[in-house]
Image (cartoon, rainbow over all chains, first blue to last red; front, side, top):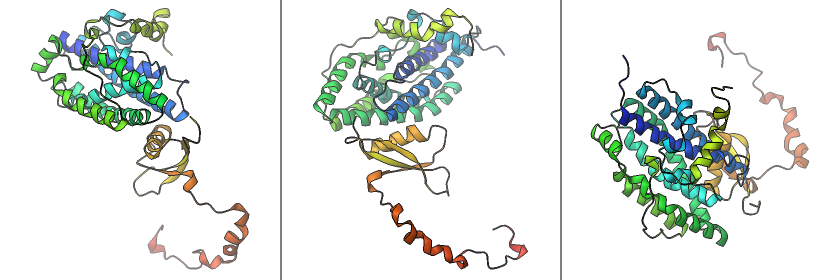
Length: 254
Length: 95
């Protein structure tokens, strides 16, 4: 039986995959540059978890679309405007504090997100979620413990973490946005209601910041646009590096 | 980071239920929780682990190699401690 075309489900799986792929790629940029050998492996482990999640989601999206596109086609052969990841995940690594704050914001959202997704009416999404929730919980634990030590560490580490919080805060509103695609799938029991995850995210972030001796940033007007392909200037550069090989040598395998 | 702020830890991993924790290696970490996480990330990447212990290397009390003779030589002459002086009935099979 041919899988019916389902644009909403395709878009939803792709945006979720884009989030994990872009953040996974960002973490991979630390390879060879991490502050310690131990953290080098920790960052790569998290990056590989995310890229693994993205692969499963792209493969599912490709099947839903039914046009013969596989995970590689979706990852390597779409342009910047076709990527629908949230703005948070494309922000540059900057320093270690920025990387860990970005991870905390993302993982504190994804842990309850995947947990809710295990109840999805889409069996493939619920299966992916069952594996991913364990990974996200570890990412949350790892990043939260680092934030505590950076915030409660030296003057320098505190100041850098403070700066990272203030810089990345503006991208956290987008986590909880629900557009038409998400709402229609929520109605079918497939999607997760991101709005409902705000209290869990708030409490995970607040608890971490309290332990770290860091104040929660003041509420400001949030930035968004990633879900409609309107990105910050950083995504294009990331894709240029990530997609270079397939663009230069189409169909290349190794 | 310096070794003063990130001391050395020894990592012990139990690979399966019923087995003992075995020394896997060492790493640098600022405190116990970070040592545990680093042990997970460095030493259990291929499904090796069910349980991890980390111990500050400085907290391990070790015998002095210089004392080897007085520590270990005296047992060499006590061959009767090895279980080789009685017959196992065939019915027992492999022990």
